[in-house]
Length: 58
Ligand SMILES: [Zn+2]
Image 1 (cartoon, rainbow, N blue to C red):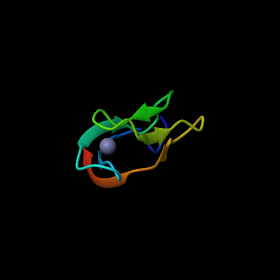
Image 2 (image 1 turned 120 degrees about the vertical axis):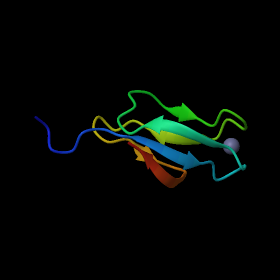
Image 3 (image 1 turned 180 degrees about the vertical axis):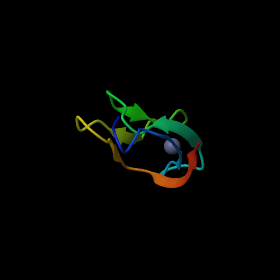
Image 4 (image 1 turned 45 degrees about the horizontal axis):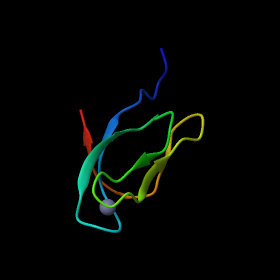
């Protein structure tokens, strides 16, 4: 069992007020649903979050 299981993060876009839920280990780039800014980039492990993380969805 992996120690750090992937979570869903609630993030706020840096370019607009949009908030959305993203998967921590997303396999592809996640863009803001409102303005299209890159919110999350895959790295092979935990993705690189390019937005403000405001919470974790348990
Ligand atoms: Zn946005």
